[in-house]
Length: 242
Image (cartoon, rainbow, N blue to C red; front, side):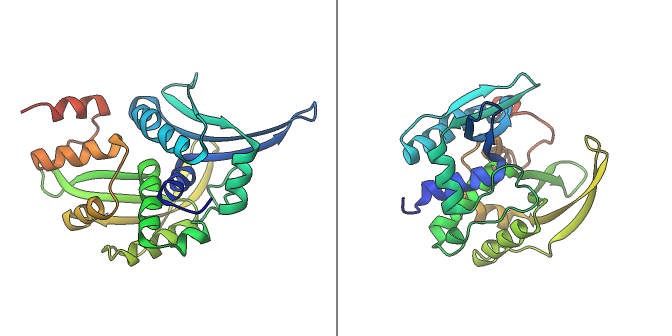
């Protein structure tokens, strides 16, 4: 398939919160699947309405949403050797754990701005954070799009595209954080897009399809600020308030 905006956006989603799996069972059966994880309370609408539709447009088959037994987790999943092979062979996305070594596929980096914009939207909908900081002590009114990855290659590739779109931002910031799950220190890399001009440019050139993100922007536009630490249900209720 020729790369189009739908494929580029799906690859962004996959690199953000996705996983390609291949394994061999003890009875010599081979297991292939593609999956995308999310929060059941915050991402169900995005998975059920947008990712499901996007997947069908590209691959002409349905993908299944599964509510995990673990608290508030959602998994959207499709078993298919053909789809896993297509993605791995054409976009060089590794099977298994990709967080430390993933990057933007070369054929997307070399594409036009419409393809890059679609890719960034998929990546942002799954793995960026839109928040509003307190620039004064009264309200959360100062926009910040926070971009964080463990992969140094991926953050550098994202920086390249952001520069091409002429966003304003500083240097890549390296942080060390402690993961209690594994009792180990890890490195991560950040890019911060601060301010109204960056956010408005983002909405004009790229935008969000995930209402987890877009509702924050809509509240900020309507009220001039967006409260921190309110969930999707509360944000939707707030948008209906006068």
